[in-house]
Length: 312
Image 1 (cartoon, rainbow, N blue to C red):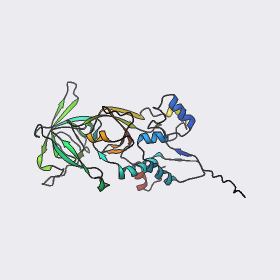
Image 2 (image 1 turned 90 degrees about the horizontal axis):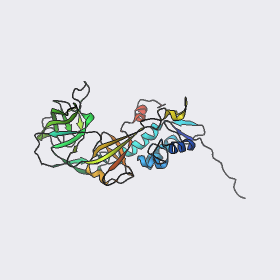
Image 3 (image 1 turned 180 degrees about the horizontal axis):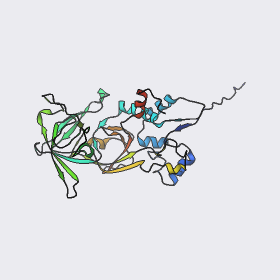
Image 4 (image 1 turned 135 degrees about the horizontal axis):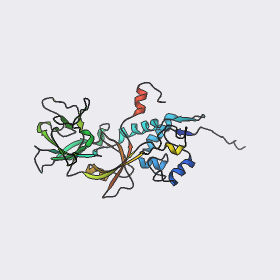
């Protein structure tokens, strides 16, 4: 006698700050609000893949939330937490500068190139290390310098010493501006005794900055992604499309990355140290690399859980 068919019912998955309705997703694509079905902001498998979400992270998220029969809304931060947890363990670390500011070390020998040992992943000793070229002219993040810093700003400022990761201590001695008063270059000195990032006399700068050799840096475009909607419950109080986030994608030209990033294949996610997780986009060409930001480093869900909250 044939067995009776079984019917298993479960609730639909809903995530905050996005929509999963196919009818709405079609409108997003057809009306040009996103780049297509595989846009990194889209909650589609192809979109998550292009964003750089690893399959393991998505599976871990599904295991976390389980299967329910009552409709509910799951915070997207839970998905991001699961993805970060995987990437923190597996992603290679690399240097990139999204908004470059030139730094010149005046007492460093002109034409000299040193190679600094950099760890590929502090969570995985088997990942080994790589060599980073270090020269007299470097690039740092523009936001890592302030001419007149507030009290709790510990990064580079006139007269202040900071550590360049894996390299030396440097002290800012002068600021170069253009005709409009825009800061275009920093002049610094370095302490040769601090190679590797430590000082024989025990000095400990309060900030450590990442950097790139100006001579060796590779140009790139960075695409920074945020939630597709501004509200956790899009359309709850007005037309859903009025809640679209106008800055869900920010495109940065003029970014710079370390040479090794030219070899990272599409589909592999790496960590840009101090900046977040990024993955090469399919729009990349040999002459113009494009990286999508997968996630920032900040994990709001983990912080909420550590404080004993529900996250809702």
